[in-house]
Amino acid sequence: MKTNDWRDDLPLRLEDFVDSFVVKGAEHEDVYKAIKAEIENLRVAYERDPDPADDDVETIEGPANDWPAAG
Image 1 (spheres, rainbow, N blue to C red):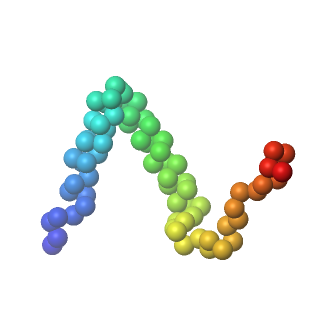
Image 2 (tube, rainbow, N blue to C red):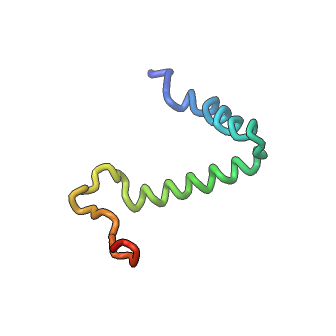
Image 3 (cartoon, rainbow, N blue to C red):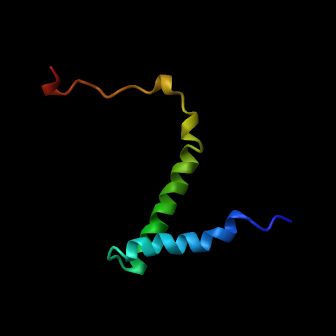
C-alpha cells in the first residue's frame, strides 16, 4: 500500500494557499467562496475540453485585423 498519496499533502497545501490570501487581507470565507466558484468553472471547462493541450493548433487562427484602425 502506497502511503505517500497526493491526498496526504492536499489539506496542508490548501491551508497554505488560503492563508496566502488571508495574509494579503482577504477573509477566510471570501477565499473559500472564490475557490469553490473557480473549482466549478474548472469542472465545467474540463467537461467541455478535457485536454486543451491536445487541440489542433493548426486550426486555431490568430486575431483578426479587421478593426477600423488596423489599416
